[in-house]
Image 1 (cartoon, one colour):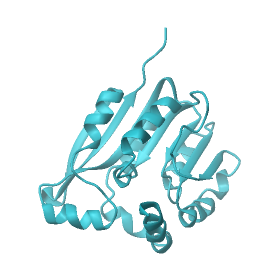
Image 2 (image 1 turned 90 degrees about the horizontal axis):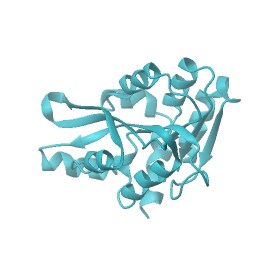
Image 3 (image 1 turned 120 degrees about the horizontal axis):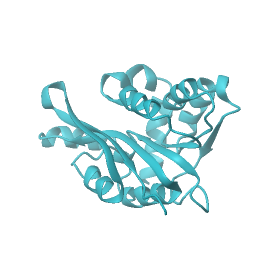
Length: 205
């Protein structure tokens, strides 16, 4: 039922997503720049790729990279195909839930989550574990997302938009990956906080 509600939600929002989300999905461009500065190899996987904005930015700045984007909304992926038309030979888009690792063996050098983990209410801990399993030894996870708010009314309003915001993500990320970068910033005078996190899996040998 939750997945169906989210799919219906994005059926309406897909066409206006990029024109409206700049006003509150902060930190996305900054995280992409941090990824680029690390010269991350490929392949790269984005969970909840939406309209493909992040994938397009990565394709532009990492011309040798191969990328995979996954999303549960076919309407969002339809927009992504348009936005990624110039890079179609390097990007694979998957319409499915992230309910298991993508590959049988670790295959990705980087997995990106951009404001998607906070929308995964029941299985978010499993999703983090699937990402850990999908990453090669020494691979990176990069996350930008909502963190918390001191205002219960705002949390309830965000909940109506399928977002859970109570500081639950960072502790699990920090316990699952070696922290390389962590920033917590505030938006609109402290109405809410959001975070940027880059972590690394263990290196074998």
